[in-house]
Length: 435
Image 1 (cartoon, rainbow, N blue to C red):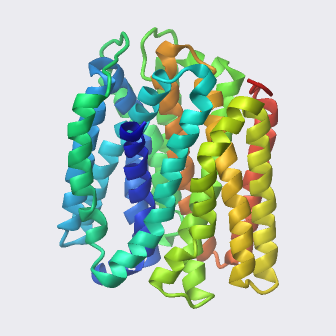
Image 2: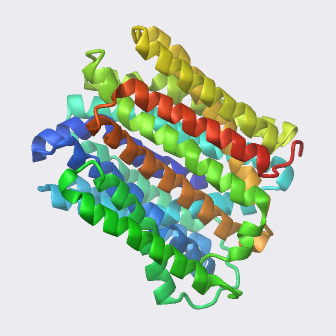
Image 3: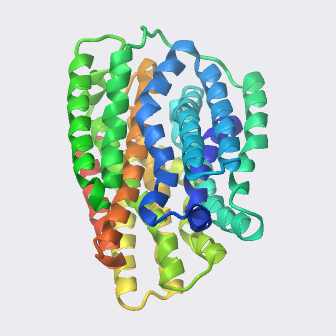
């Protein structure tokens, strides 16, 4: 449990820790907000584009071995980020981190799920999610503290000793497992990377007027690559993405709801520190601490939420969690409209964080429980790919909203609508009401 949770902790930590350090990074390299979002998106896009490849490699050479290699790459990328002397160098380090995280997260989830009885899987995934939530809590606050007291480079140095220790312990303590897998088709690999990466790049560049045409071309290319990839997967017994996975209504609806859930969450997490800093006048550290009611509620409640999922069923808990998200975002929009006092925002952030704590483990268990054990790694890869794509899309849409000058109120109501759509998806996706 500890060693597999380390993977999600490090991956989520470095997804969130840059949010409150982004101002210092931007000042050092002279970046505007459009370029600054790439400190976050370069990482998320890399993970989303390479997740299925990471899973395929894990199935082929062994999940423990892949997990250890992924930890090593993540640690190397962290050191590169800390040593960066230019924005291009920093982005290269973030990409290396993303290459490590693309296998680290699904392998940790698959190893844990395979080693846990079905009757206790919800609780185990709840703890795993809770550790990820702890990274959400620690990330923004720690990023602000380190940036204010030391320098932003130290947000990456802290990964190095943790990653090295994790590699050694994983080698001795984690079980090895693999499933029959055919040779990875290089053309299929290129297609899935292009389909996943180009669509998020197009979204990210959409606010930049000078890049509208290249972004449109990239979006069209991603659609064509996705169609070609799906066409090539038909009839293959061992493929990067077995299409029979999507014959399960629970998996199809679950991953779509996951995309919407994390699009809303990442979008708000990216934009909220900027709002707390610019509109409420909070400093870098205070803006990071301002997220604690939301992320803290998620971290504290996730382990208990997993047990509730085991008892009451995935569908009930996913619906309850996302209904809380809907109410939280709608109320947050109203609070901003009528004054935006922080104490009121904090109460609503607790509600939203509690909803995320319920919905996350329910969706994970529903998706992984809908497939046979041999396909669990693939299902984990699909789940995490849509989670990362949702996060990158939500971040990009936040920037689009800012540059369209539609304001924070419109942005929050947009994420409210996204959460409402996810509720409708879960109603129809076929998760069991009770376990």
